[in-house]
Image: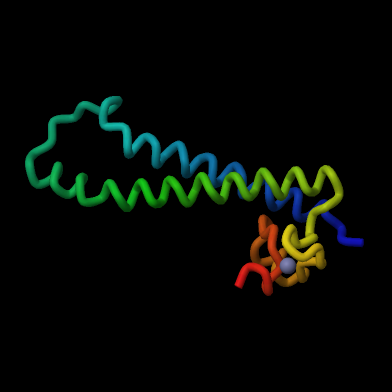
Length: 108
Ligand SMILES: [Zn+2]
């Protein structure tokens, strides 16, 4: 039986990190709250950055969702079991990616 306590702690820390990152990205993306005068060059640079920021925001939100799912799995006792094939996910994989819901075979 997998001891989920260390993973729960890890996931909670990760969750906080990603939530903070999402907030920071949102702040960067919302120019409305930040009506600073910018010269043209700065505006152009910002417009170029925007798709990158949006992609990062999507990715961060996606990982947050996976973290939440993993935390729920810990609560209901299904943590560490692949959602595709119902086989246990290797400990090495969980150590590297504590919010993994798929085993390495199904993720490939
Ligand atoms: Zn699998």
